[in-house]
Amino acid sequence: MPSKGLPSEVAREDFSEYVAHLQLHMTLQARNLVPSLGKTGVDSREHLLHQTQATFEKLVSRQVL
Image (cartoon, rainbow, N blue to C red; front, side, top):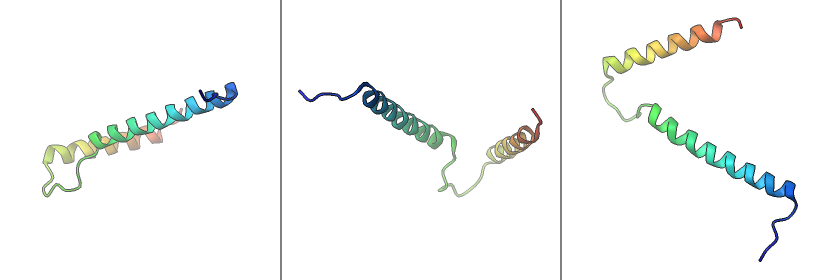
């Protein structure tokens, strides 16, 4: 049976595995949130949603904390 190595190496491997899993999860979430580029027509509701989101993000980014 192969040895796992030092505890710090094990923790680093666990952390790397966690980060890889998180990146995969974020990628899959982004696929669900971003509309497909293959669409030919843009729905007016979808366009309004994107405009509203962009406006909201601009306002939030300009706020002073």
